[in-house]
Image (cartoon, rainbow, N blue to C red):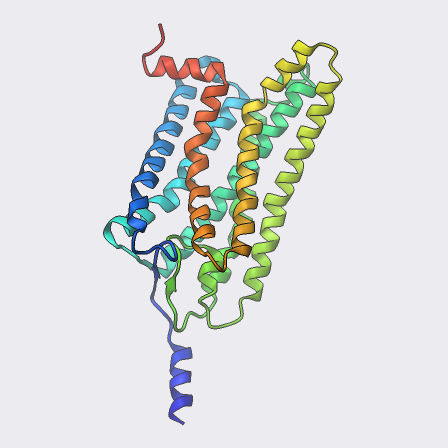
Length: 316
């Protein structure tokens, strides 16, 4: 009788907050990671803000490709800021508690910004496809209106399709455990603490990944397959080299982003023995692309590099 009553009382109890324990298995020395993570975050903020200022102040960069790069910079700032302040608070000040609404909001923001990043890469792939395969029609197809419509469509797609993720997570009943063995609120990490069935949460997470990341990845690589086919038909080696150089930086970022997505997914499935590996990859995937995307474009794009020099007062 008493046992049944205690079980009923436990099932009726709803936790009021979650505790983010940090990186699993290395709690004792995880604070040593705070310095490199803080430097990555500062680099991500500084580099992306510099890109936005440079594009704004340099008239030669007022082109669709650089507008898309500016939107990517905003998304990168949002993605890094969604998780890094809380992670650094955990590592520096042991501020591990997070309310349920804050946790669900972080889940929504992470999914939205990740989807936006994937969507912007798709828009940039379409831009390069039109520029290389239909160069004469490029000015009439890829216009300011195209960039605005493409960006709004990506915002609506990711904003609306992501809403069910935190909504479904918030409908679960969290009756006993509230310690998340991670330093951010991941959807499956949070819902695994629920006392009721989470099949619908797992199903929607998988469906969302296929609809957004899967479709974007397929279309991006289809675009580049058509680009490569078109480039290989060029008779001049110089023209081939020039065509490939115009999309090399974008291709590097795409390969880095989608390779990281695949690595994170695989390590999540295979990380039961060493859970710190998928957790660390998850964190790095949210801060490394924002930190290194601007550097890749700066190194590979002469116009942007010249713009940086003017903004920083280094131009001769």
